[in-house]
Image 1 (spheres, rainbow, N blue to C red):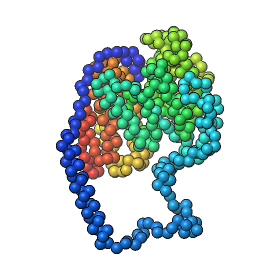
Image 2 (image 1 turned 90 degrees about the vertical axis):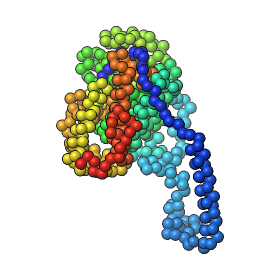
Image 3 (image 1 turned 30 degrees about the vertical axis):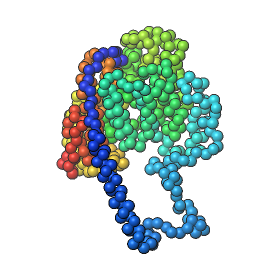
Image 4 (image 1 turned 30 degrees about the horizontal axis):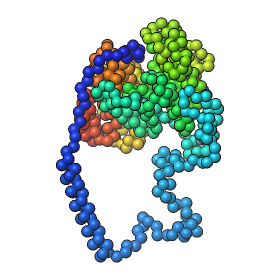
Length: 463
């Protein structure tokens, strides 16, 4: 873990990412070709229509009229294109929305973080799910991942390039595991800048997604580096908030770096609604902001700046209101719920080698498969990773690598390392993750520091 002191303003020197442009002659040639092809097609179609007889119905299509089918009781088999799209691959009915009133019809309901508290949220969610039964099955494990960045272009010349790569990484993970994702790039409360921006976003996401049991906030500078690992939700059944941290540092040392608030999992429930309101009340939009800065600085002796921040505020609630809040907060320290990049990136080559050694011995893990069934190999991997160990002493893939202190958008990285060090580390981690994705598409990057080059993956690789 790293403290926010590593996020102070420094110069960030990185090379610009260049992009090649297309020439106008390419488009001209393409238009000429397309025009010629269209003329040829129309000529052939006209001749075919002129000389061909009327075809008889093929087995693929029914010539039975709708009235005939209805009298035979087959009208339910007639599905319009809009209906076929309504129920997606997930089995959710995306069109069914009864006109019966629900919490959305309450004119007093506001998504704002400063609005009056939401009451009876558990009952309101339950009623909504009854109205929308296709979303009820499996709701207890349904997750919405929320992330975001600023509304304006990054100050760092390659900041937007890096944020796009971080976002692609999250989309890849979510697609493989059937998780919805929401990317927000506006301040829903203008005064809640920087790390405080997440609280109004999470509250709005809870209201917008009553079908989701968990809201998973992941900072924009955090990357999934184990595309197979799944959150152990069963472990958190009795809790409403999951954070990464160390209980000893929280309760004994009272350190403001005892947790990291950049990644957290919060249940979509009444408890969470109330917690978000209390947590956000320490933010810069509240009249008590300066007072909270004093309280937090007094409580945490190692805190190096006077302003109230979200991380210190969360730890304060753990310490001071343990019975009300702390007992429902799970402090995860058994795996990299989020891990500090400087203790991770240097070990990625060794991790790759260890995984390849296992694949050489286990043909099942080498077998190609569709991306949609990527989770089928997870139980097999677990058998061979039982002794791999989590954390810096192990060789298991780190779940989430967090580039705390690198500030890819602003470029104001911590002075303890260079901008190039940050850039190379981000490229390496993101390419490491991308290899796990691209393998399902038949390609891999041969060099983790070269994200632009890929090679085809041979059959039965790595036999």
